Amino acid sequence: MILSVSRRTDIPNYYSEWFFNRIKEGFVYVRNPMNAHQVSKIDITPEVVDCIVFWTKNPEAMLNRLDELASYDYYFQFTLTGYGKDMECNVPHKREKMIPIFQELSKKIGMKRVIWRYDPIIFTKKYTPEYHLKVYEETAAALKGYTKKCVMSFVDLYAKNKKNMELLDSYEIDNNELSAFAKKIAGMAKKNGMTIASCAERIDLSECGIEHNCCIDKTLIEDMIGCRLNAEKDKNQRGECGCIESIDIGTYNTCNNGCRYCYANYREESVVKNCEKYAPESSILCGALDENDKITERKVKSLKEKQLSIFDVAIF
Image 1 (cartoon, rainbow, N blue to C red):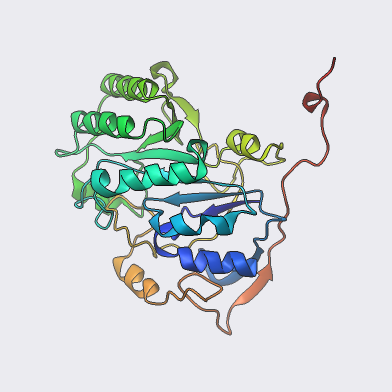
Image 2 (cartoon, rainbow, N blue to C red):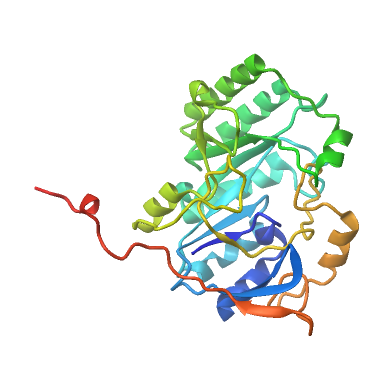
């Protein structure tokens, strides 16, 4: 099983104490986003978790507790953009705070296990292509030697973020401009020792030096754990998404980053209400079980292939 922590909220930033408590107890309850009274009990012991994928804009709260993850393989998807407080309301200053945190995390766990996400790319009157290129070049130079890979994407419109995106007055650029922009980004990444890939993009940017890729990356995980995985594409994600199957333990409408483009927070009043329910000792994030809940133990297992194939054996 691949554990996603989390597409739905920034657990490393705001709920790391809760997460470490869940690791100690070896299980977590997760409410079904489509049916509030369906709750899954999920085993998250090292015997069944092949890898943990963390998603965050600020993992500072975890830096001094990483030794508690010694029994697990894991890596971080660390989002670091050039947006200010008008776009990412509660994310600290990038140059003064977040770049040093990225560098510290990389020193602790190794550059292969920290993926830099520069996404989503949004074009507005303030955040022009020229602005993004300038920020990307500066950030890539600062992260040289601290990561081997950058993942980028252009913003997607969802029903849940459409209104906010309209308020941002964002715009699209034509394909020629997009290609020129992508080529410059790719060149900057290469110059600083990084490969660059796109995340769930419909457009093919391979001619620009940017390959299609994914966030929960089978090849990366297999290389990290030294074992092949019997894992399929995640059917719960969009068709363009190449991520392999995983189980997410987050909860929508609980992230305090306040990003204007976010699809996981779609009711501000719900975020406030849910965050008030946060209890680190609870078995479920930002909530509690009640008598109407139906709890089902989800069947989970390791995806590691137990037997060697002929491709894994050197023939002399």
